[in-house]
Length: 158
Image: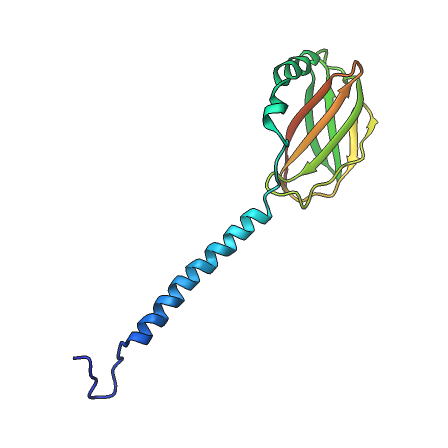
């Protein structure tokens, strides 16, 4: 039954089975290694070096930040990022320092630090970003020295 007498059929031999098996498993392993490398190389990394140390003053810092009563809104129009930081009275908050990183949530290759200027009650900076979901990692200091940190989600329409 394993012998082909007509010469027209396909004969399954040991080397052919081995080749098919090696090609199949080789393909699966190659795809897995490619995906694993892609996942590790695009991971943005840790937010803090030691989460235990960072957590020790979390509640006090959060209470101080919430006591400011600041509200943050962001928008992009005509290539300009507009960041409105208002106090509990609805007027622009008294911001002593402002630092922000604008980037995608999934990778850091497109991160940029906008150069904000306070104009017409808002912080404004020229930006060149594509449509999609972006994050602004905001760090500001109030006039009394209180640190204010917030991740602001920004959706840019296409």
